[in-house]
Amino acid sequence: MTKKHKNRVGGFGVRGSADPDTLAQMRDSAVRNKAAMTAKQRRDMQRKRATYDMEPVVKSAIEQIAKREETSASQVAEMFLAFAVRAYLRRDEELLQALDERTRANTPRFAWELHLPEEWLLALEAYVSEAQKPKKWGE
Image (cartoon, rainbow, N blue to C red; front, side):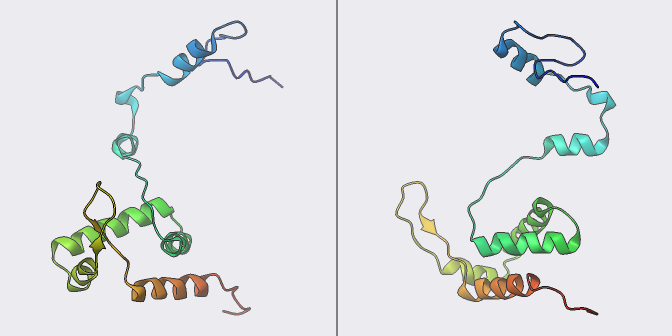
C-alpha cells in the first residue's frame, strides 16, 4: 500500500519543505488540454454556478422531482428556470398575475419584492408531503 501525500502535485514528488502557497498554486493552476476534452466536458466548463434564495418547500419539491426523475436537482432547477423564462417571454397570464402582486422593496438594491402566490406554495407543500410518505406494499 502506498502512502498518499497531500503535498504531492501531479506526477512530481514535491513534498516536505516546499512552501504551501507554492504547492497550492501548482495544484490549482493546471492547464487543461482542451483538444483532449469531450464535447460534454467543454459544455460543462462553460456552465456557471448560481445561488438563489428560495422557499424551503420549493427546494424540497425540486429535490423530490430530481429523485423521481433520477437526475440532479441542479438539472431539474435549470430546466424549470428555462421553462419559467419562456413562460415570461410568451406573456403567460398566471405568471404575469403573480408578478403583479409585488410590493415595494426596503432596499436600494432593487425596487420591487416578489412574492410566491399562496396557491403555488400550498400545491408544492402537498406534493412534497405526498412524495415523502412511505410506499405501501404492492403499490
